[in-house]
Amino acid sequence: MDFSLKTLLRRRQVHDLTHERKFSCNMADLIPIMAEDVLPGDTFSNTTEMLVRLVPLLAPVMHRVNIYTHFFFVPNWIIWSFSRYYAGQNANDEAGENHKGWEEFITGYNRAGAYKPGDNGIDIHVPLREPIWRITPQESWTGSLADYLIGCPEITMTQGDRYHHVSALPLRAYAEIWNEWFRDEDLQDPVPVSHTSNTSNSAIVADGLDVQTSRVLLRRGWEKDYFTSCRPWMQKGAPVKIPLTGNAPVKWQNAGSTSFARVRDGNGNLVYSPYLLECDTYGRLNTAFGAMELTPQTGDPTHPIGFQDTLSNIKIKDAGTDVSLGGAIKPGLQTNSDIASLDPNGTLYADLSAVTASTINDLRMAFQLQKFLERAARAGGRYIETILAHFGVHTPDARLRRPEYLGGGKSPIVFSEVLQTSATGSASDDTPLGEIGGHAFAAMKAHTFKKTFAEHGWVIGLLSILPRTAYQQGIARRFTRNSRLDYYWPEFAHLGEQ
Image 1 (cartoon, rainbow, N blue to C red):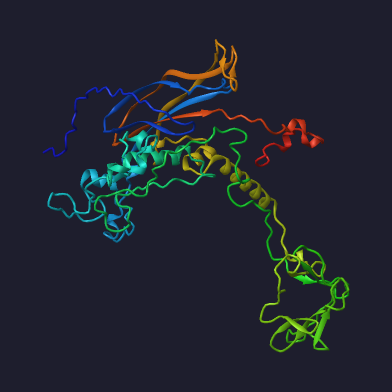
Image 2: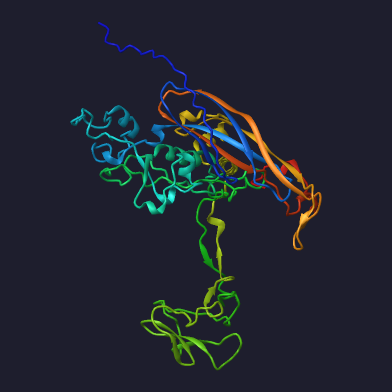
């Protein structure tokens, strides 16, 4: 007998999802222009038509500005990966990571523990609803993320305790896209994204609210160039040092030396005349007269400062009066000129005879490790960036648990002048004939993609407007050369982040 389940061959239908979005936005904002859920077997064939106008300008902008579109597919299992509702249900699953939230929600099967059906036949440990985004009046204003992403009506404060309850999955998808594609991981912290069906880390909340995921309209950074791609460090990690083995003991200088330790203030100035302090066999100051006075360098005899030796402690004496009592010896004032510290320069040295020198292979390893860390700093910290930088292999997004880039494009915004054809104005504000104003627009039909999907998820489209980077300050290095080493030499190429 054949117990195999025959594959269903369902007929495919064509649905026209063409729609328009009319809105205003600011430059550099990542504006959601598309949020469509996807079923297994769906095929999206997308073409973007855009007409963009800028507000009237006082003068035409003499600069290049581009408009970008990016489209991503975010599977549901990425943004709803596990549920802490199951924590402790299985001995090997204390944190709940073995429970796949989306998979168990859509299948009704608890994959980490024993099957315990409820009244409806679904496992009682399976989430019964997806995470909810409660949109508050403060989040529903025109121009907010909820306005662009969901298109929710604005909730006025006079309507009282009223909210919009929608799915939190597109909200999570938007934040996940920014974290993986637009965030500079060396300079920006990730925005919070919940991946659970329970954000309280204990029993599941009654309404399954997602209170962790960011609700802020995010912005993209400048395009990468010579300056914006600079890293805050020379390498990814601690700098590599030339290895030395062994310890260098610190020893006292020749007993016949006339160099002794000195006392300096917080500014590094010598404040006391150098005197040699001796100790007895018990580690106490060896003073024949009960107090060893050190005259200040100024030679003022009216303010001698000395150390009084007792069996219990050491006191600082100023003209016979205790300046400081207790275990700590410190001046009463805490300015740089009052704080004293011991300067052992000229009295101690490091004995390098006990240190073993590095081998050639040790130096080679240090050089290669430095190259490795520098490449890691330039590449970035994401796994896909590491593989591409070190192995030259571009791994598909679908295999690395990250939003999959579907397509997009870049189109220029055209700036043009507007000439005034009549002289108008008043006594305080005259605009003569031929006064130049400006306007800008962009019109295109492009940025296409076609994709067949094999699982549930969301297609998120983003629009952003970004000027090209430009600089007006600073002097190029070619104008400040002084020596022959200031010129380019191949031998000095690729030495760190120059």
